[in-house]
Image (cartoon, rainbow, N blue to C red; front, side, top):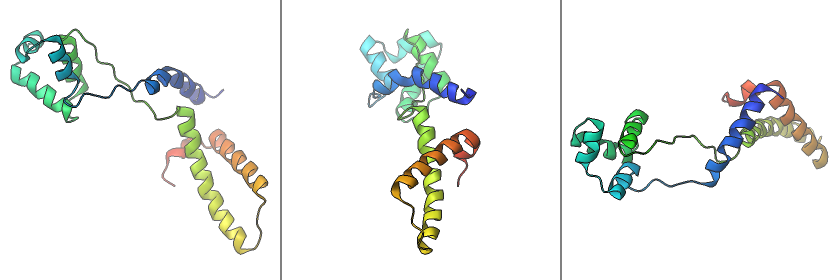
Length: 152
């Protein structure tokens, strides 16, 4: 098995649970939700972080508007005896993302060829077309994996 394919399968296994459990961020952010649930004030968190209350307030505002850094988010979480858990989770498996991309490229190629063939009155039976499409997808994944993400 190709190294890249093995890496995708390994990551897919690790990410499978993440796809099933999608904890939606609270409207005003995790920092505020956790701080309030613990009964901590800005001052409590600020003292534990060694920063000002305004800094903690700013972290909460920046988290809510998606502009906080991961480092700041991690430090604030640790001040509340929490840990930051971070992941980028694809909507489907990585294998499926790659195969879907290859299928899109092949479909574009086949559409161009199909148009030319129909102009020349040389239609291809649908069973042959489906078989050829799958063969082309497999070949693209095997022979040209780096070309998948170049804009066609």
